[in-house]
Length: 446
Ligand code: TRP
Image (cartoon, rainbow, N blue to C red):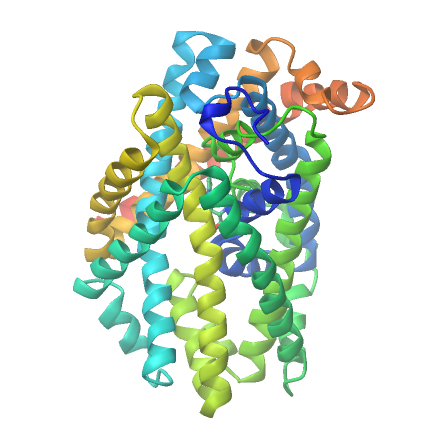
């Protein structure tokens, strides 16, 4: 099938393939650790309701907006923005590319740790001293090596093309990931003493919701988790054929993403509580993922503990890989369309350039934290805000574009109102909170 305009750019082989690729982008470290953690800390089931509200009010509308720009133009982000808005919108496209660079740079470092842990469980057995292990491998030569290895895999897949590289990988890996996460959640339910884990994760506390901080975290999480605000979904949609019902597809992608986040919580906390490690949940850093859970696996001990370690870390690795692909694709598709490079060239050069940008994170974790707070939170929200302004006030006939493939434009007309009047104020509020938080985090480091 090559109906996507212009066909030389490549296109998805099937609707299912596109959904799996988009879900692959969405599901990643954000679901498996960041979400369960935020939910437990910020009011349990009450936070879940707030989060669902944010997904509906800002996540989905922006997802539809990115889909509409991408499919409508059939171009990579910078060209797509120029196509609908003129030269000056190029700047927003550049912000997308910079975000892609910075997010992938640190994301790949963390993904490298996942590879190291999987390797240890596979070939060396259980991790007796997770704190020491993390200390030893999170920065330094091994971290740089696994960063490079991970990036080589990512760029190899992207170099393979849209259908043969990205789609084929996602169509195989995502269903495996669903089965593994669900299987582990069921396993955790049977461990004795897991009960309080559910309480910790789910117990509603509506009082927690009243702070602006929590509201902004929920918005930020919705953005990060759905891969919004930097043109990743835009780029994926640019390889779509015209006839698809975008809102329906978007709803499926978001529904699977939220579902996996939720089930990840049902896996992580019961496991930790069953093994009596609740005292250590408090460290909110990425480190907890690499310290507390391995500790739980060594408490389980023996072959079972090791097996779970392998399964858990390789599942996370799969989630991270399919997300990394989408981050690189934004940069690569831009180089292909704007600089007229070949896909293979662009994948290699950009992949290696991003690796170089990631090396400082693999040497000093403070750099990683800075990339994460600036690009992973602030840039994405700025990106989303301008996408809303672009689609709401600049782009010609977004309503018609979204309604293609639907029976009427009723839904589309409601959507554009949300994009114009609901999304911008919410994102401005979230941005203010995130900027303050970023300043606090950076001031804390220096
Ligand atoms: N959504 C991914 C996660 O939850 C991360 C990610 C991939 C991403 N591509 C993105 C985040 C684009 C923002 C923008 O781990």
